[in-house]
Length: 458
Ligand SMILES: C[S@@+](CC[C@H](N)C(=O)[O-])C[C@H]1O[C@@H](n2cnc3c(N)ncnc32)[C@H](O)[C@@H]1O
Image 1 (tube, rainbow, N blue to C red):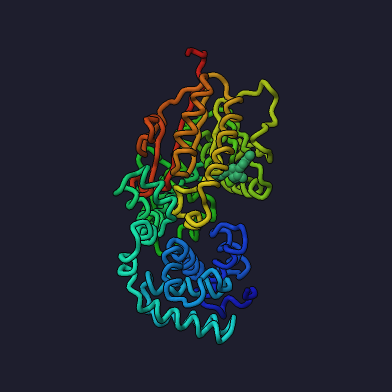
Image 2 (image 1 turned 135 degrees about the horizontal axis):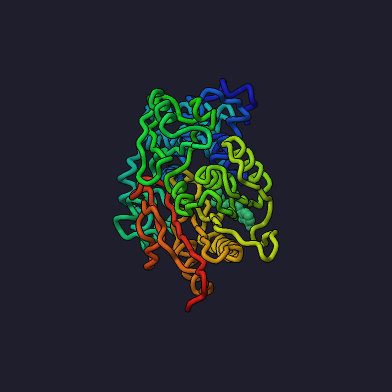
C-alpha cells in the first residue's frame, strides 16, 4: 500500500483500487475503507476525495457486471484468482471503459502502468490484453445473449437472490425501477440542527453559497439539497454543526415517534446517533433520552456526534439491549428500536451490501431484531409507544416480524405512522410505511408504530 506521502504520486485509479482491496481484505464497510485510507493519505482536497469516492462506489455498484465481462475475456484464470491489487485495478479500468465518460484507451494505459509498477511486467501484459478486449466489448450485446436470470442480474447489477426476492415483492416493473434507482447516486438531504440555529437563517446562508434547497413535505427541518460547487460537508455550516446529513426516510422515523418535550425515551440501538440527535432536537433538549449501543467504538462515535450537535438531554449507555440494565419497574414513554438489519433498502448508499448480504444472514438478523423488539416492549408504560424501523426491504425483517410480535403481545396494537410520506406497507399492515428510492427518492425503509394499550381488551 502506498505510504502517506505518496498520494500525490498515485492516480485516482490506483487510490480507488487500494480502497477496494482494503474493503475486500477487511470487515470494513466501503465507506469506512474509503475514510480510513483518505485519513492515512491525508487527503485534504475534497475534489480528489470526491473523485476517488465516486470511482470506488460506482465500481462496486456494478461489480457483478464488471466481473462478468472481465471473466469472459480472461483466459485460463478468473478475476477471483488474481491478486487483490491487480483484480481491483482491472475492475476500476473496466468500469471506466464500460460505464465511464472518459477515453477507454487511457483507462487501459493507466491500469497497465499501475500493474507494471506495483506487480510485474507479466501481469501488466495480461492486464493490457484483457482490457483491450473489454474495450471491444459491447455490453448490451453480451447481456442479451445470457439466460433470463443472468440478464436481470447483469443489467441491473443485482445479486440473483435479491433480484428474485424483490421481484416477488414489488412485481415485474417496480423491481426494475428499484434496482435502476439503486444504481444512481442518492439524493442528498440535510437536517437543520435547530439546537444550534434556526432553519430559515441556515437555508438563507446555504442559498447564498449557491446550494439549491427544497423543503420536504411535513418535515420542516429537512431539505433536499442540490449539490453546489462544493460538497455540503465542506461548508462552514457543516463545520459549525448547523446542518446534519440525514436521509428523508431516516428523519421520518423520529418524527413518527413524535416525542413530547418532557418525554422519557429509550433508543435501543442508537449509534451513530442520527435518530437520537433528531429526537433531542424535536424535544428541544428537554425530557430524557437513554441511548444504548453495544459496540464501544460506535458508542464513542455516538458521544462525539451528540456532543458536537449540542444534544444535552441524552445519557449514553454501552450495553447489550438484549438484557436491559434497568430496575424491573422502570417504564418509559417511548422506545425506538432501529436494529441492525440487512441494509437491502440502502444499496444506493451502501452498494457493497449487494455482494455481502445473504439469505442466511437475513435469517440471523431477524432473530436479533425480534429479540430487541421484545426486550424493548417490556419497558414501555401503558399508553406508550414503540417505533420500529429498518432500512431493509425484506418481509421477514419487517411485516412478518411485526405480525408475529402482535400475535404474541396482545397488549400492543398498531397505530398509524404519521406523517405519511411513504406507501402503506405490505401484507395489509396499512398503518406501517414503506419508502423506496424509486418512489420517494430516499432510502428504502420500513417504519411501524406500536401502541401499548391502557387496558388489555381482547
Ligand atoms: C441500524 S444501526 C442504528 C442507527 C441509529 N439508530 C441512527 O439512526 O444513527 C444499529 C445499531 O445497533 C447496535 N446494536 C446491535 N446489536 C445491539 C444490541 N444487542 N444492543 C445494543 N445495540 C446493538 C449496532 O452497534 C448499531 O450501532
